[in-house]
Length: 245
Ligand code: G3P
Ligand code: CA
Image (cartoon, rainbow, N blue to C red; front, side, top):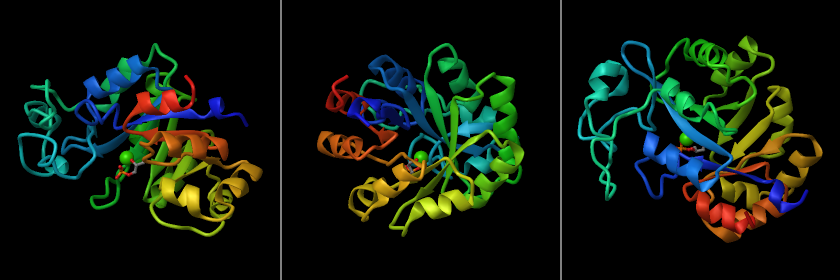
């Protein structure tokens, strides 16, 4: 596989330059020419799919509290510019709004379903319903550190793309991926670079590898040379340049 086959997915949008998981960060990634977005989803108290990384809003907004305890309307009143120079009054997006933004492009979206600390029963139904309602079939890759959630997604939609997120080192991860009928693994990039035969084993067994968070050109190039399907990066411009695009 030549290195220009590797796709570039903007981690929480172009989050090195704009407030993470917000429309300006997604817009910037699109303008830079990224192939896709990675984003994180939680549920508000009124059951809306909210795009935000943490269970709490404290780190990235001027408010305090848990996403699950606030309505979408309450969350929308807060500023999520997260201290980024040049930004103010940036609102938290819903997943529906992000799909609206990129619908007419060719971008894919890696939706990370956050069920690590707070569990959102039925969130799997909601993401699949929204994908269908908005005509996004074939453009979404679901990932989660909670693999039970991905099993639910797989049960609901045999055609859904699922990627198993993990942080440390797993032996022969393609065996586990096949067992769960997953399309991809999403390892920490150091695991992808350092674990013996990880890339070779996955490529040989038809399991895509989408490592995160790859911010340095040398790592982007090394992973692309080993056959990574996509790199998930805070700096889409750096990754695109490293791949000669
Ligand atoms: O999906 C890759 C990466 O985003 C997983 O970790 O904590 O940044 O959501 P985190
Ligand atoms: Ca994530």
